[in-house]
Image (cartoon, rainbow, N blue to C red; front, side, top):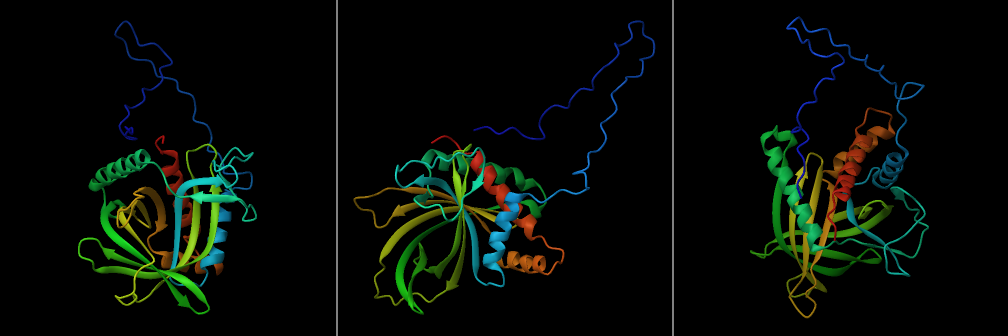
Amino acid sequence: MNYADPTGSPPQKRRRLSPPPSNGGPRPVELLPAPPPRLEPSFIGYDPFDDFTKEVADWIADLIRNQENVEIEAKIGLLLDQHTKQRLRLPVMSETILSPAIESIRFQSSMTENQHKSYNDLLNQRVQRFAHIPPSLHINYDHTRAIDEFYSIQSDEFKVRLRVSKDEKTGKVVESVRKSRMGDMNVYCPKWGFDYRISVNREFPHDPPPPQRRPEMLRRKDRVSYSHQAYKIDLTQVFPYPPGKDNTITHELEVEFLNPAALVRECGKRDRGEPSAFDEMVQVFLNNIRILIRTAAPP
């Protein structure tokens, strides 16, 4: 897939309103129309905050306010009707936040190998293009391969899932966390090839179980990560481990905040009426998701 360079198009020629002289005399002054007056954002002089972004920002703020160890991520996939097993069909024409009251839907966070490759190519192109600009704008690339082990552990009165990630090559534990879900927001995008789900979770470091305990589930994870300013895009292939009868590979894409603690701090400033980057950070988060969805390759 070729992407046009936004700065590579030839300059526009000025519109000529009088013919060039034919006798070698001086060129007449070109008469160009006066530029239109600058438009005010509204009749009261300011731009009202976009309702969609405000709904997402308020929802995230309600969940992360004064919290620690939070994770805010968006997975790209499809919203499925549980009855038909097909993609959801609703009488709306554009991007729509679904009410939590809507039942009988399921979110499938996967894509085809062709779509995965297309995203990989796109993101690699951006890494190369951004390599020659100021470091603060670079896209940083990282490739990791890990084995994930899953265990059920007791936490207070409930059982929660513990994930222990080990480097595939060395076997060293690189992360051991228990995660609890705080909330999900489903967003339906009828004009595009994917929908998305925003999730807010809490992640707590936790000691791995003793070596003699066997995990309840294993998976092999091959992930490339692209970090840009406050955000990270993870493109992941998940393999059954160890290989067996079902060797189905799933391909996943998610966008998350690199430093959720910074978003929590900005949320606090917003609540106190101080200057805050909270809403802008949420808006750029949504921008990244939308660009990925709108550049999806066919299945």
